[in-house]
Length: 592
Image (cartoon, rainbow, N blue to C red; front, side, top):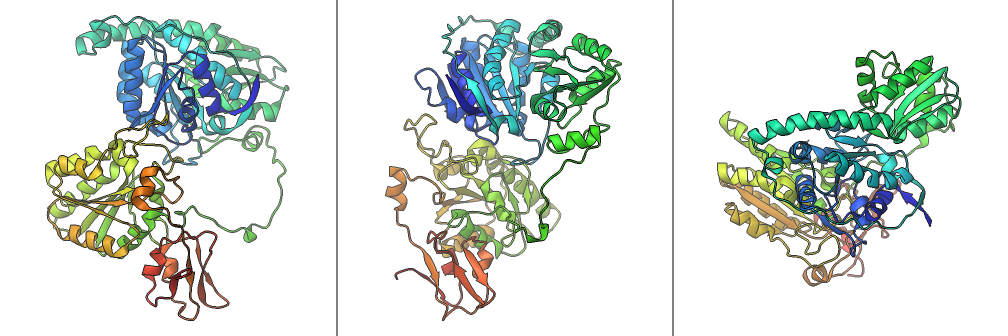
């Protein structure tokens, strides 16, 4: 049977076919759909969302030590969070095979940086595999698990956005039921004390030599001989781009197993071609190692190390060709920057926050990061997952120590709070900061497409679960002032902010209202109701002051001909934030 699958869907199928019985992840674009597509195989695979990437890898490591084939998936910056256990497990080695999927994001389509995680394999001294299409994404998972078990190593399975999200024809196979390996107590192997680690490091170096021998012989790294005037070494999606530009007019060394690199094979290839190019996205990972081996090649001298590659970039860089594109009048294109949805529960909070004076707002990773955009401009920083509260704590302490009269408000989402924000809040409680922390609880993990989290009451595979009570959690770690508000009621938000900003003690405000796009559960309907209304502008009352547009709602527009505001009834959900913001009572609920 053949199906048309994305790389993420293919990885999920590959995990099923390869006998994986445990899979864990924290959702993050472009990796999210991997676990979502593994979850339906619930009869064969236990799959879960973890509160963060470190935990996701640690539970997969636990399953691996127990003897099960295991998988953890995350986006590239998530590997930063999971690096601690990953580096140590590279020393100890595995029992059941373990694959860590890193979904990199060249071009930063949904990320704060475009780091190249191939360097993690070299840094941790773990084996690495890179698929170039959906079929390889499926097939290479099984190969990765076999390599993991044969060489006693975790395997970094490096994907990129275009591999994750592009579709290709994939031929299915049957599931291979792999017997769980026996667990045996082995303190020298799995207890990473300095004494044991020194011995393990020697074994790691010996393992790398064996892995390089394998790299030079495996069909994962293959020659494609054509004209030998030009030779290209490439991997991942860059291989597809190179093939599109050059076709069969050049020779290729296509790399699928990329750490350790097959240096013997690379030298053999280089000796056969007249001019050697290395085509890779982002960092000169392959190029630096090839040049260090004394092999002459051309890489980042012509290929950019910023942003995604594509065939046009490669054709221009190497052939000097300007590929023909469709001409259009750019002046007629309409800019559509990302914005919070109409009815987003965060908008009311941000609108109220934007009115506060002499404050610094430290933000976090999520769709609520869009609160930094005009016209709200209600966020000053965004560094990393969970960083808003700790960044805010540091800023508030620095202001106070240096006599600066400025207050700090930290803003974080519910899933991000569970991810690493709770640790930062402990720091505030412990060190008695009066920074104000706001947890935007929209009852789901919103930015990555509505995944469950520890506060939603459901698991990845649809089972009912315990629901963490955020107010009680905050109180339990020592926050004296905790208040929950409806973010769509501006008076409530204003009062809570004023009270918290006036306090000399740690304060937490929790805004609790579901994401406007969320499919309401029974619990949601019981707590929040399910009424859907719209707001309209009474043109007789409208003074054209444009205050309603300053809420940033995409359903509101200002009509220049009439000098009146207008609400798109097909977008409006009746959240009433604009109604409350209007000083002339010109916005009303339809039918009221």
